[in-house]
Image (cartoon, rainbow, N blue to C red; front, side, top):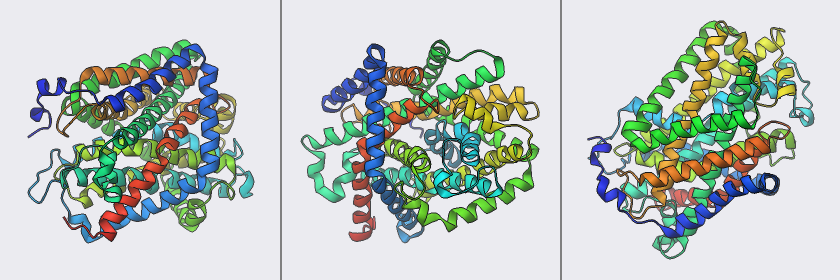
Length: 522
């Protein structure tokens, strides 16, 4: 039976609001949007102050908890606990395997791999913002190229997806197997008992998680606006600026709102399937027309360097690799993944009824991680190959036009590049929309009393949250671009991550206690 057929619309629309979550969350998110109109400079300054403080002060904690989450994810996947089925032994999955994977992949990937599949390796390779300075690696060398691919693998594979997976697994198990509520607070019951789901605590925990994902979504949308805007400027000569970004913001926000309002089966599932197929198509085409042997060699060498430096990279709070590399890239990545993790966990749990823990971890941890490695190995290696051979100068493009601009010069150089450019622009819109529609649904669910996993939250809430997030993203891109062109949205992401860092630490601790120390079997 499909999820949509199980929904009782009249029951849904009449559910009450969780005022303790909705009101403070909307005051902050709506207030940020209003502040962007009244005093956008103050909004960017507040976000920047939080960015600098949180990553400089807690960089060590981000790194340690990321490694712990990775190890815990591995244990849950390959131990006998992987046989536990969400909903009990007789539970039947709600979605076919590949449809489930499409929602899991595109629901979390947003615009990330498209935005940085070319740009991030080239930025490392060219030492554009000083990423290689403290490491003593000479920009533009073979060593720099291998480092660029290896570091990209590290930032975009098993560690970040472990963060999503741990949260989703915890929430799914406690909801489907232990009868806890579908909330972030419920995932802390193994540590604190049922008292964490009563009184003021669930409101505080769920509010902080909601704010984190709202800021994370605004960050992703902002990055998408900056990227699509730079593509239109590069390909069609239309200068990007506040007007163009406003139009793009309206188009993207409308796309994910329409999908979200349609629900999981009619909106999110269909949009995810389309988006995933476009990803597969782009990847396959570049493998065929790109320097295939070079891709394989660079990917292999990149993995060797990644494995060789795993602990040094994994436990570097900033001091080993330097601030331009560690704070502005790896810690920023961890901050935005952690910002997404608690509420992304709820979404991943909702679509995983009837699956075993091992199936869940394969779909949400292993397969997306492998996809990230393949994507950066193909796109990043090709970009470095063309740069090394003088076929195009992506380093100069990014230096002159910002951190997200290299992709379009790269696409222009491809055979039939002018066809690929609009396809990639559409992919970017779909990529963000598939993440945003799932998260606006989850946000609205968290603000509604007694929501069940197979019900849709009120449409007016989805609309309200979507419009607020779109407004914040627009103001940060339009008025807080900074040196990289996306500084403002990076500030937002780190702010979201810092809000739930300690909640995420407690979620991981609760999972370890429940599954390893208490020896849960069913």
